Length: 435
Image 1 (cartoon, rainbow, N blue to C red):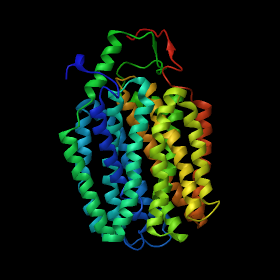
Image 2 (image 1 turned 45 degrees about the vertical axis):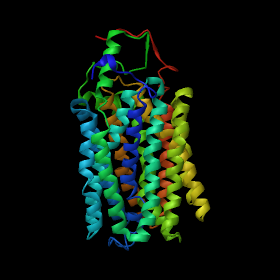
Image 3 (image 1 turned 135 degrees about the vertical axis):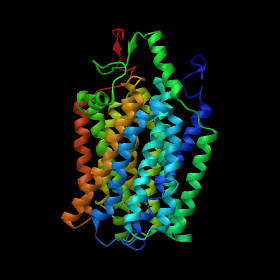
Image 4 (image 1 turned 180 degrees about the vertical axis):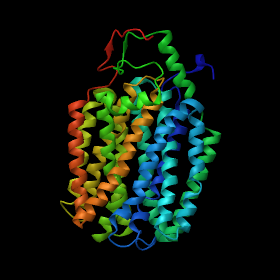
C-alpha cells in the first residue's frame, strides 16, 4: 500500500476499525467461555479436589505466563511480518481448545488448554490493539483504546453468561465445545477475508515525522536510539523510564483483580449459595460495566488526560474488590462487581494509551507488547498470591483483601512516579531534531 494513500483517523478507517472490533470481541468470547463454567465446575466436572486453591489457580498461572511471553513476542513479530499474520496465527492455535476442554479426563487437560488460550490471547488481543493504534490519530488514542477494550470485555461478559446457560442446557463439556468452535472458526474466516495489515500505517507515521518534524512532540524517553533493540525497549519499559515503569507495575497489579474474578470469585459465589446462572450474571456485571464504561472513560482521557483516570481507577477498583466481602447476597455482589468494573474501565484503556503516548511509532508495537508482557504476568503472580493467601488462611475471603490492598499500594506508586502523558496536555516543546 502506497504511503501517500494512507490516512490516519477513526472516521477515515471506519471499515477496518469495525472489523478489528469484531475480532477483539471474538477474542473476548474465546477467553470468556472459560470464565464461569470451568472454575465453578472444577470439582464436579473436571475432577479437582475440594479446597485445592493452588491447583484451582494453576490454570490462570499457566495462562498468565504464556500470554505474557506471547505479548512480548507478538510486538516484535508484528513489526517484522505484519499484524495480520500474527492475528491469523493466534486463531490457528485456538482451534484445539474447545475439543481439549470437551474431552478433558482431568484438570491437567484444562491447564494445557489454557496454555493454548494464553498463546491465542497474547497474539490476537495484542494485534487488535496495536492495529487500531496504527490507524488512528494521536488525539484519538483514548477513544481508540476504549472502543477496543469495550468490545473485548463485553465479549468476555457475554460469553460468561451464554456459556453458563449452554452448560445448563447441553452440559458443561458439550456447551463449551459448541460455543468455542463457532467462535474460533468464525474468527479465522473473518481474519482472512476482511482484516487488513496495518503495519504500513505505522511506517507512514514514522516517515511523516521524519519528513516534517512537528514543533512539539510527546514526552518520549530521552537518549533512545531511533530503532532500539528488544533489550533496550525492555529496559525502558521495566525500569529505565520511571513513567513507563509506573505504568507497567500498575498493569501487572490490576491483573490481580482479573485473576480473582476468573479463578476464585465463581468458587466464592457458589460456596455462598449462588446458582451457576447467578454466578454468570454477577461476574458478568463486572465485565459489562468494565466494557461499557470504557466507551466513556477512553474518550474522557483524550480531554482530561491519562494520569487521574489511571490513579483513581486503581483505587476505585480496589474498593470494589473489598466490598465483595463486606456484604452478602446477589444484589450486593453485583454492585461490588460493578464498582470494581468501573474502576477497571477508568484505568484499563488509559494505561495502554499512556504507553502509546510516549513511545514513538517506530517501536510502539514492541513497547505495547512489553507493557502487555508485564500486565499479563500479573495473571500468574496474582493467581499464585491468591492461591497462597487462600491456602494459608483456609478461606477464600482472604484473597479479596490481598487484591484490594495490592491495588491501593500500586495506585500510590503510580501517583508518585507517573506524570501526564497526553501529547497535547503535556508535550515536549521545540524538540531537538532526531539523528
